[in-house]
Image (cartoon, rainbow, N blue to C red; front, side, top):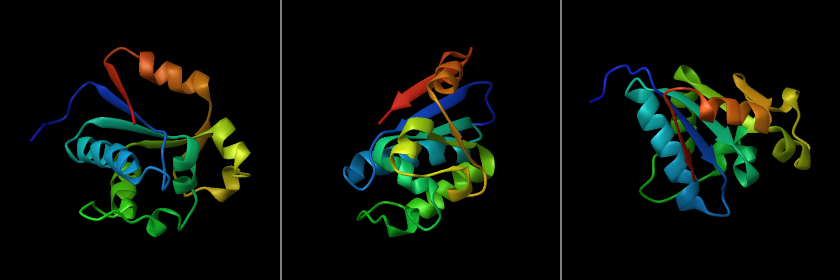
Length: 124
């Protein structure tokens, strides 16, 4: 498997339960990279923003996919998870509503991360 790298993987999840396979792909890729020692930043946007709220990831199921809670735990333990500012506001999610370790930030921070030297961004 891969060892520690100097690159960062920025993954933007744009789907939640509304498109479960796309959602699970984003979390699976981010968690796999994190477990392999890659620096990971997972962005929750659109319907995936709900997974920043305690208990919501546990409600997600997809056959033959790892539990979203397990994937999210791996990413939170080793990387950064961010909920989109506008997406959170549209859902009345504030800083006190999210899981420990999840931050709320906007497009400027996403662009900064995605454009950093050595970064690779993926959007699902």
